[in-house]
Length: 148
Ligand SMILES: CC(C)(COP(=O)(O)OP(=O)(O)OC[C@H]1O[C@@H](n2cnc3c(N)ncnc32)[C@H](O)[C@@H]1OP(=O)(O)O)[C@@H](O)C(=O)NCCC(=O)NCCS
Image (cartoon, rainbow, N blue to C red; front, side, top):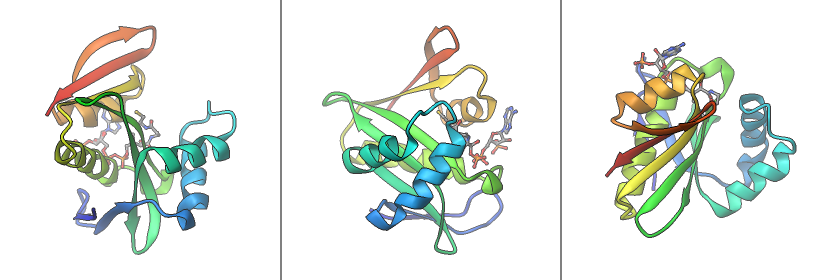
């Protein structure tokens, strides 16, 4: 499955499944986006192998990724969304999140859950603008859900 979006500035964003050649870019983006992850190489390698994992490319350069996990027959979790720092604020994160919704709907899931930090304003803004609603909070961690 492959998808072409245009971000919010008309840039051409290609979304495609991750390949083994992407590991260096994914680990770099993941490690710089989620600084609490202890061993980013092992962490993201495992996700690339086991999860639904897609990357965003601009001019054949990997600039972001989204990954998702099956929870049960009806529910999937959007487990990771990240855009390289120098490419943020241009609509790539939202393009990836929208792709994830289309992909999971096409896979037959009925709902998507997301955990994110209450302090993560850009992420919350993206998810809420796409119809995700808050269904719970434990400490700083907010749970959002969208019915498909
Ligand atoms: C979250 C993340 C993926 C967003 O990627 P991005 O490409 O910058 O996102 P977009 O440009 O598509 O959209 C960002 C939106 O947040 C908005 N935004 C940015 N800063 C904001 C803030 N402080 N408060 C509220 N909204 C904000 C932007 O205006 C934009 O919304 P708009 O399109 O309605 O104008 C990126 O910031 C990232 O990689 N962060 C680190 C990893 C992370 O936190 N991932 C999410 C974990 S669940």
